[in-house]
Length: 149
Image (cartoon, rainbow, N blue to C red; front, side, top):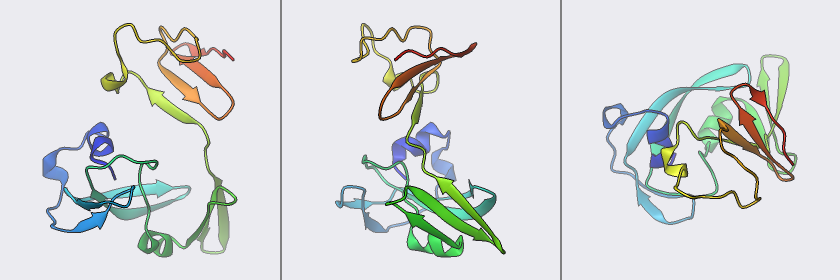
């Protein structure tokens, strides 16, 4: 887990368990972990205690779930089908990947800038967040979605 996400979810230095482990970050570079964060992670209908190594790194992923988590959660991730298949007893749950991304401007002051303009030319004044996918940008207001394409 990148340290920037760790801070964004409101955790403090006291929440980290000390470690001296060095691991490869999202870009394959060696990175000393700041510590370990234990949390209850809910995926679909299942909740499992998960340990995340917190690192100073930026990359294409928010978090990575390792083989230990995959096996403990009895699931099969498929990057080809963009889904996660998990078993809960005899029940099978298939969770499709979400190709949209939500950016909350109220919780992310580092995304705001004076005189900044959206690259698409859309007016994003008054938006609570912007939902982005491969084919469109949709501003979302507190009173409800207002679609602009």
